[in-house]
Length: 113
Image (cartoon, rainbow, N blue to C red; front, side, top):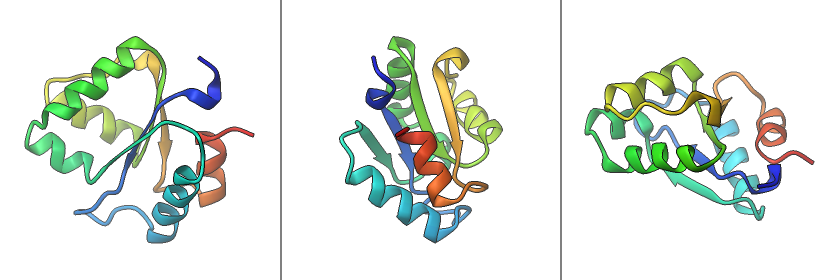
């Protein structure tokens, strides 16, 4: 699978407002305009708290090949999946921290040119 076809899980962080709005919206706009496979979720924190079965689906997807997760701090994302008893295969996941990156840097990490 080429780098351009690596599936992306994009977290909107809808409930915590932990991500800068400008970055969240800018990255999502670029992702929607690309040909990269993207799955947008409303909030990984909320999904973990509710043991949402989609977390297991994301873990299974990562078990089949590399994925990228655009969300907040990598350690937080790891523990959200762990708390929901669906730990991610670390060798298959690239985390893109939308809390610390600019829109441009996040897009470059997600959709390399």
